[in-house]
Amino acid sequence: VSWLPGPWAPIPISGVWPLLGGQSRRPGHLSTAGWSLDTRGCLGFEALAQTPFLSCLSVCSVTSGVKILPIPVLSNNYSYLVIDTHSSTAAAIDPSDPLAVQVRTPPLPRRGPGWICAHKWDHSGGNMALRRRYGSCRVYGSACDAIPELTNPLSDKETVTVGQLCFKALFTPGHTVGHMVYLLDGKPFEGPACLFSGDLLFLSGCGRIFEGTPETMLASLDTAADLAEDTLLWPGHEYALDCLTFASLLELENPVLEQKLQWANQQRLEKRSTCPSTIGEEKEYNPFLRTHCWELHRALGLQRLRGEDWDSFRARVLKEVRHRKDLYKAN
Ligand SMILES: [Zn+2]
Image (cartoon, rainbow, N blue to C red; front, side, top):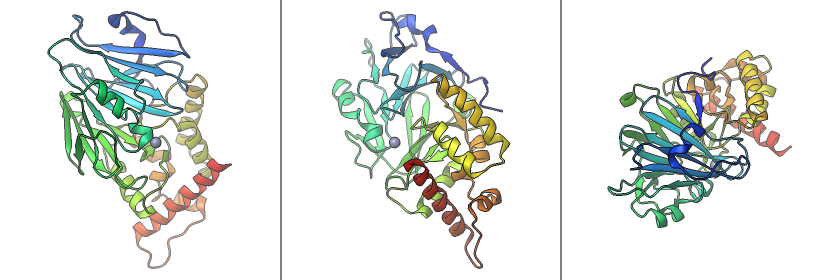
């Protein structure tokens, strides 16, 4: 099973910490993690984070060329620092907290990183402070979601290049009218693609349908489900335990789900991150990606009506799962 340690298994950040020099890390307090790509100190990246829901920060080596640092912010949000180790460049995804993601001011030549936002305040609250501090940074995001300090509005399937990192923006409305997710191309690094899914897709869950219909959300979820099975999923929130528990109440006999729930339980007991998952895994237990499965239809007591269009039926299934999840959350 692919969530067990593989070539992209997290490694402790403490190994690279000495390169940045200075303070030590104090779990549970304002802690600092760092990444330095050049031993002469040409360029370094630094993430400061209060770690309310993680016991430690760890950097994930997707391939030898790409490292990803999930940064816990607010009560359950993830920002991500995506580092291209060849060109010494990084992009920050969803910098919600201005204190959480900072770049060490590099000596000349100054290479500005890019900030990429999914949408709305809990994912973009840090933009203004970051732009004030790093004026050369570009802020990419959906043109429709009123993202603060947006310098480069994106449309569907537009690409953003930061160093050798190439992200494709995918329009996935439903949670908000302009919601976008970002797909990092794995080919230049001979590794899997990475999906930064914001509030579209979580481990075993999906975002609430605030500004759209179940049909809109279904089409957006299909966009994610159509990606390669080995695509790594990096969601905008740590909701795994809640979502897996809910899924296990719906589908009672799904061994893959049971196994993942047990694993997530252990991870969260130790306050460890449950990221990343893969699209292939998610399709095996995430009810929001299983609207085509008869096991789920049976569990919900739903049947396709005579003459009902297949996608209309799946949207009805999605609406019911979302409704039950909303009720579950309320209790
Ligand atoms: Zn969110």
